Image 1 (cartoon, rainbow, N blue to C red):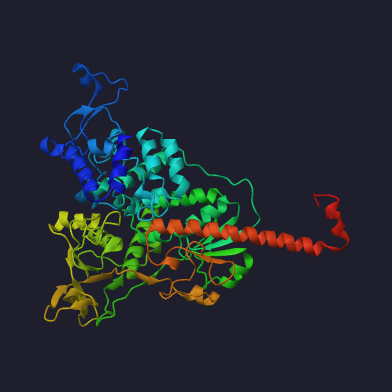
Image 2: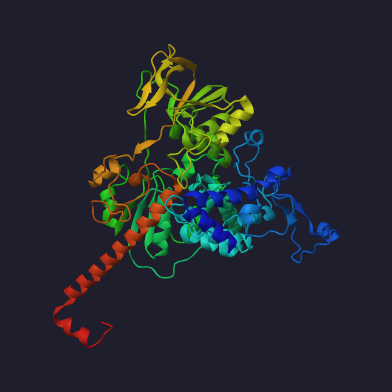
Length: 593
């Protein structure tokens, strides 16, 4: 096939051959610059309805609209040269000034002008190249090894039921990853070598959203139970994936969560505009229908004895996340108005949920709520969490918001030390940055700065902070003398990542830790230093992505299942040995005894 041959040439050739291949494909795609864009004012590929084509003497037996290609012609949608004929066109978020008026999801819903039509989804799926080596699902792409080319092709062919089946083969919760994952698969997409990558993330959540709407996702009731029991501590993405897999393997699973709601990071760490909590509850309720038990307000190691838990279950899986935040030990750190990101985001999300349920007046602790309303806000640290803090502050109607980043501004294109298919470390504009730009007219980020001290008033309230510019050296960041600047600040949110899991459970169990204070368990095995205790997710690998948490949760389940099978065999063997004596000869008489 032409498309497959072209991609094999791009991915396997070297030197002049590869350059010539890239130039050939780029020349074919550059035609769009000489003609009007194939993307219309509605944000979708331009189309002509069949009746218009009939007037021109062209008959489309499928009665499907003709789609404008890069060369300016209108032709039926086809996949053979889709990556050449069609432009990358990701589904946009709702308009910044519109979405700032509510806490609804960024993604458009059916009926919104920004929502892609079924024709546009097919066009975007047609750009998938059917690669000889699909790097999107290798170690540099999708951690859960999603079968991306397969379900892209199924979407192109309109086989949505088969598409959700293939998606669920590797990913327990595509409605989560399709919304919050930064899409390393797109960074590794072969089409991204010389053009925009396939809109994999958009296609993923369109598959799962349609499956929910069409009733294709139903409880999978387990017919045969093993009689073995597992306690899973932590209900974030790793814990839920562990529980889901083990339950389908036939084991009885109970999930313990210290918060008042199931979901962990998904419920309280990711704000509502990125992931609606109804979406989390919908999946949790499905897991509950499938037989998983959930226990909330159970802080293992605090109000529940972890050794008692271990004694009552055949295995224990720890998926407790990395919840110990990185602090900023500078003068003035204890002033009122300096908070960790998770404290800020969690209190906000709890308030939203209570407001929606009508319990705000009776349950809300007004004195501990952190508001950005009318304040000069500074978010220290970038990444997804930093952006979430910016977006939350904007919805609080802050006076201003500034985002400090220690590192220099990333380049606009890949640097020589950041080749494809690595994750592209390039400058980008996330939803929070776009919202600040829309309201205040400038990007909120300030690069190459570090905080020197916080300044307070006579009542111990934060009123400003002082920064120094930094330069990156071989030994790390170095402050530039004489570069101090003072910034007004009523609220500072520390979003500098997480260093490790909290230690009280591992200390109680006597678990070995690694050099970063994470629970020590070998990748791929997930067994800790204590028999029958497993660990996975951020508490084992360190702070990472939701998709990595799902991957590790599935791995924990596989390892735990192998352990339980062996334990059951050992118990059966021990029981047979104990039976011995007068009944020993009966085994040779009847194979059923």
